[in-house]
Amino acid sequence: MWKTDVKELLDSTDVQDPTDFPPSSTAPGLRALDSALRCNICQELYEAPVVLTCGHCFCSLCARNQISVKPACPSCWKEAAISSFRINPAMEEAVTAWKDARRFVLGMVNEALKAQATASESLRPSKRRKPNSHSVGVISSFASPQRKSGRSDTPSTPKERRNLDVGTSDDDIEQDVFSGSEPLASNSNIECPVCAKSVPMARINDHLDSNCKHYLSSGKTASSSKSGQKDAWSKLLDGKKSGKEKEKADAEPDTPLPKASYTVLKDRQIRDLLAAHDLSTVGDRAQLIARHERWVALYNANLDRSPALRKRSAELRVELRRWEEDRRGSRKEPLKTDIAEYRRANKAEFDKLVQLARPKSDRPSESSSRGEGDDRGESSRRLKGPAVASGDAIMVDSDAEG
Amino acid sequence: MSVVYSRRLKKELQEIQIEQADPAKRAAGIQLLQADDLKTWYFSIEVLGDSLYKNETFHLMVRFDPEYPFKSPAVQFVVSDKVKPPIHPHVYTNGHICASILGDDWSPTLSVMAICITIQSMLASCKKKELPEGNDDYVRTAPDNPKKTRFVYHDDTV
Ligand SMILES: [Zn+2]
Ligand SMILES: [Zn+2]
Ligand SMILES: [Zn+2]
Image 1 (cartoon, rainbow over the protein chains, first blue to last red):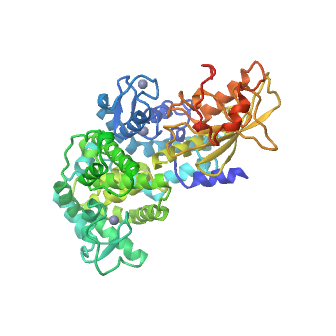
Image 2: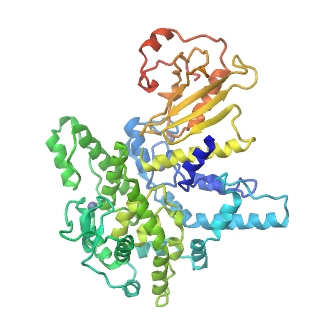
Image 3: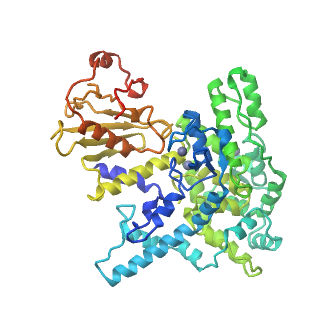
């Protein structure tokens, strides 16, 4: 009876972990490899990895969280301080490559095992992570349409792709992607994924940048129908060009924010600190401090990524907001689901656009990464404009992801 | 709890499930009884082999707060008509446990299963069934949540 509850809880998400791979007796090294690229605190693939003085490596944000509780390495208890963090770009690069390779390798391993099992009934595929899905689930997910698109493509190297992402791709591609879609209807409104208010589509980035304060649409409400809503988002997300311009305008400094000594600050001064970063200034003193502390951690942890992988401030603001909502336990579940669904629903559309862009270019297609749902938004964030970036932040860790 | 860390908790749950389905990996004597959400889980704990707690079964309640895994979960034995806490020098009759892994020695790299195993071995190594010193006083004034208690650990082995 309790098992049903547990199953429901786990079915709502696709949790990745090293046991997705067979044990070393069947597939030597794969489990260990997947596990070596994961942070021992959050158990996710490293995000902005940093090395402490003891040599242990964690996600920057995880390590910052730990140090705010106890200034010591959680693995060996040696003293640790944020000021002595060292970034680990080599690990970051390995993780980026592994994110691309993981699903592919998993698929190959499982196909090999399947072949073996067919050949000899005595060799069973190794146990899968989901007790209820078993090997059938793995194999079928490997053969799912998303997978196929990934496999049929010429794989692009992470470096090439990264170049595309930061907007150095030649305009040909973007033009093609553009002409493949309908012209942007700049007068239509969409619902902001953060505040749910109606915002002119063309202004959604600025709206998000303003922390949902500005650019609310006056009269008209957001496209009422669900499909209208999705269309609007789809056009916006495909509008790479505006995104690129935005990115340039929004070049951000990479100096870490200093820690504030809140004890000597008046409420008003803390509000000023928040306002300087376009953050909300509502709440009591404890909330203001918590918000600012968290912002400093998010902001500085983001700087521990390589420049090409950094998130934009607007994304970080969305993350901060989600964090506060989580803490209040008043999270708006439907919002997250809508965006995730939206992305799923539009996957085909994205792939089509990429196909359109392809013939005129020798550049390897990006759809392989797009097809991979388990990238946790990483590659899609890099591939699309800032509007997506903000949307992604909402679901970066979403349960529906994956 | 932030989403990243609720994912982590789901991973722990998944791992426990896999282990329980596989007798070769299962931590003998530890069973997940209930996990309706990511807030409260229940385990049953038995000490197998020779020990003072032979043939006794205890229930452990594990509660997570938003700061998990940076703060340890609140862990206590269930006290009800059906199940009683073990009589042990580090276990109060209200189910509260004095173990350093639940306090100073907690690390976010540990897991719920690590706690269960530690508590099981704390029982297994017990030499004498007796209540903690000052049990009655403690139980009379103890907060509902054992995490609000500042325990002085009785020794370094637990
Ligand atoms: Zn981490
Ligand atoms: Zn260390
Ligand atoms: Zn908004």
